[in-house]
Amino acid sequence: MTKHEIEQAICDGKTFLGIELGSTRIKAVLTGPDYNLIASGERVWENRYQNGVWTYDLDDVWIGLREAYRNLFNQIESQYSQKLCRVAAIGVSGMMHGYLPLASQDRLLSPFRTWRNTDTEEACKILTELFQFPIPRRWSVAHLYQSILRQEASARPIEYLTTLSGYVHYKLTGEKVVGIGEASGMFPIDSQTGDYNADMLNAFDDLIAQKHPDYTWKLKDILPKALRAGENAGYLTQEGARLLDPLGNLRPGVPMAPPEGDAATGMVATNSVAPRTGNISAGTSLFATVVLDKPLLNIYPELDIVATPTGNPAVMVHCNNCTGEINAWMNVFRGFLESLTQDINNNNNNINIDNQAIYNAMFRAALDGKSDGGGLLLYNFQSGEPVFDLISGCPLFCRNSRADFNFPNFMRVQIYAALAPLKSGLDILAREEIKIDRLTGHGGFFKTPEAGARLMAAVAGAPVSVIDNNKAGEGGAWGMSLLAAYMIAKAENQTLENYLQNQVFAGQNVTTCQPDAHDMTGFEAFLNRYYKGLAIERAAIENLQL
Image 1 (cartoon, rainbow, N blue to C red):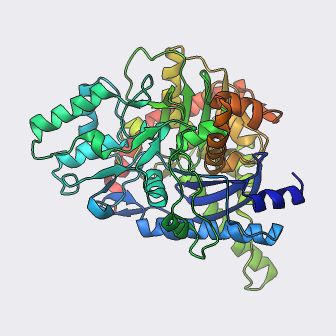
Image 2 (cartoon, helix red, strand yellow; image 1 turned 60 degrees about the horizontal axis):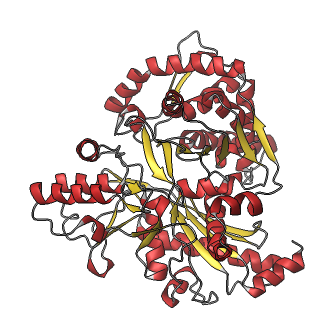
Image 3 (tube, helix red, strand yellow; image 1 turned 90 degrees about the vertical axis):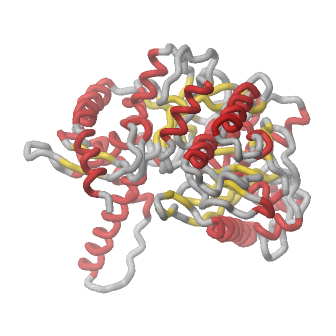
């Protein structure tokens, strides 16, 4: 679109607003009728570990949303001399799973628990046995039942249990709904009915009635309604518009798409909603999602059964940790470069060094490292990692005196360690003979050309593609804007699969990295060392926690 066409689309309200509350950024993007980015705004935020819980304060949610939206608004006004007053549709995405219980008058009963909280092992074992269905530790129902087992006061007066995106959507519209993909991270979904599994709901209620009779609510009554992609999820209210834009420029009445989690928006942003397609989202957390064309034969604790935004079954390999440790080392290297530059310049001026340039240098160096990482060993667990049955984390780097310790090898093991937990789940999919026609990467991990995709291909043992549309690092917010656009376009009776394939991604260039045999052999050598060293990591968690 030309600048004039963009200005006209903004003026006519023919744009789409996608919002994502990610683990490290709250982001707002505006896309045009051609699905390309017009502007974006963001606010950086971080979770806190308070009283044994990984959480974000809900006040920070609204502070961050308003700042991200204001930055978006200012960018539009600066570049296009237009005030953003109306849009065609809005969608909200958030980090999937978690525990956000509300009582009457929307009173928060417990600090919001994010996906990083994995202290629900007892509940998961009971519910997995009860349902004969794998219930991961971070799912909302696992947190709910664990709270009941602990006899927490927060569980008894619940009137509404939701997720972060569901909460924000509720406050913007007054509607207690979530997208079916997000719902599948709260409680198991029946793909035939497009709703929560009725038999499992009854089994849960029977369990509560028998063992915890003082709880009077029924589970379905406190869960948000599940909606498929394309369904209307309400309208932006006057109060909701002011929550986003206190200055009052944004008009209410905008239709809103069902709020979705990062898994669902990742599927959309990579055109991976059809059976036998998959995507790998690599950022603060790491997960691979594959849309199934047949059911799994067995129950695996390493695998989650979730849903696409249209309700089709998908399998997810979810790892709690990915780039957090790489980010921490980026800050160390940034500090070194600032000190070095100041020393060379012999002054105390602040030096502005672009973070992405540092990341690019780190990732590219990894390609020059030895294929096995030179004998180095690293664990990136900033929080617990259920794949290895770790309920807390402790980042750890170690080596013996014979290891080849240099920068390229250090960066190679940084990336290998970030991806290692994913391997066990991918191996299960291979044993189950789950076919994958296409595997696409997105997230900040893939921003450096070739490096992330090449090493991911070595881990997956399969080709990994990245779509060349400059949106690899904006997957969640952009994917949510596409779901908002699809809600408007669905009147033309298009399936989401056809809509993405024939309209959004038609003609897009794709870069594909094939697995390199040398990299694969090196990763296997690193992985053997990695598994042997898990005893060191467990000892560090036990002895180095503050």
